[in-house]
Length: 283
Image (tube, rainbow, N blue to C red; front, top):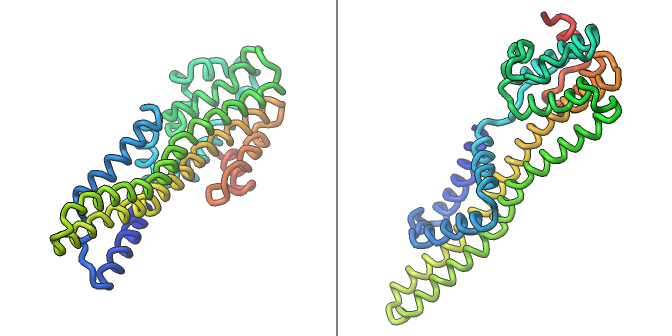
């Protein structure tokens, strides 16, 4: 919703100023220029990135309409799940975690926390971190580098669509110039018709306007918003990593969750006392 409001302000402010200066909105819309600009935009994106990355671009743009990927309640459920699982491992030994981390789809514990259980990437990341510890393949101190490598890989993967969007945004002003030059070339054959020349030059200049506007008023802001959304998703995984590593090193479940809590940005971060109360009073 915030993104929509932002676009309303951008477009409304631009058109209002143009109208106040004596212009008419339809003077800015010339379909030949629109087709040229949008054709170059989509063509550039197709040439620039693999299909999988383009799908991530579309998904990222749609995600910006949702706001932040996780809320305070989502983090609270995550901490409850981890606390309960860590308590189980501390009381009954790591072997007690096997039925959950080896078969997360059938875990009765995970199913209690629906937001986590339906998040395939988070479940895989959490279980992949604990699995080598449960089956004894790695020592506790080796879990940290393993999970850190996983976080870096995910960050790199999520950077790809944002990078493509920034490159497309950087290209748009040049595409606007290309469209304008094509319009001017087309105008040259009508130099004897003064009235028609004026209209065609205006149409050509609208291509430059459209290229710059789409670049700085649409694609670039969306790219930044997608970046922040992706950072929110990565933060969720960093909370998991910090807590799992702390638990693997032998820290108590409450302390492990507290270490994870410190990875959360302030607006969603519960206080230490609130987290402790939540975990100790959870059923």
